Length: 417
Image 1: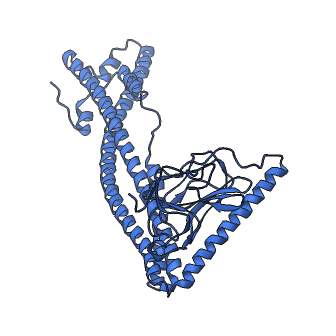
Image 2: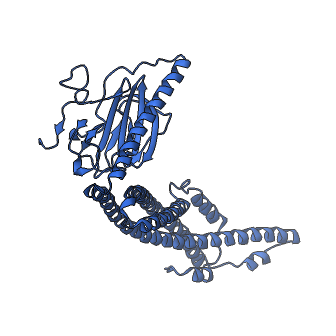
């Protein structure tokens, strides 16, 4: 029985193969799977993006180090920390995408490796069958075929046939070698993918821990600002003034949109129907109006409704259908969105970790417009929600057709549960 040998020995041990074998190999080669779902180019693109994010991270850290513990720069420091948190969040998403790519590459490469090994086994078995057949009959050399020619014309004909067979044999041997090289390459790629996947998973854990630390530091900055209220009264007043100015600008933009709609012959009436809860939580940490400022920070005349128990990953929904007129970051509201619902009617959603909509975009009631967070003038994750009707802020918990019910009902007040 012929034993399997290394490819160098194969060439020495095996004689020549038939053209039929070459056809079989070509058939096997033509059955390869179409394009890959994941490629190393995708992974390299993600790594390039990761390098850019890392450079941005270092730049932000340098700015934070320059501010150090200067209390007069607390607002700027909080803004930079919000940017740093956004950067780390993007890095986490990048690493998660890399892990997904590695998982796909591993699955694909394993399947390709099995296929290549099956092709190589099938082709090698055909080699073995050919050799066994030649051993049983006794090997007939090419020269003996030529010597059997009975004329010069017959000799030339036999030479042509032999040349075709020899060329075919060389192609088959080259294909076998190529398959063996492909197997080695696939095995190497598989090991690389597995090693880099393990490394990426470890990096993901590190990035998530880093994100937690950054969030705590960001919230602590506002807490420190409030604990030294006498020293930072000017900064707190600046935040409140900015918030009021941003609200006023949102109303101007809403009026401008309504005027454009009227000029185009569109209805400018407030969208019919009520409001839905902008988040899945029903836990109110601060109502609109007079209050004891939480942690000593923020206005004692609260202009909106704070909804807590949301964390950093809860979806924020459009409470009512309308057009997005503001989607940006400010040091007071953090990441915030304002939606115009018609004449004098807007809703505002603040302190989000990220925004999912852009200015000019029309959203339906219930569409996701962002993710909750603690950006801007905030000491912890919550959603600051404002409703304006007829150009005046109203309390969604008590305002409406049934004041005792309000637009948003079924809630629990902080301290009562």
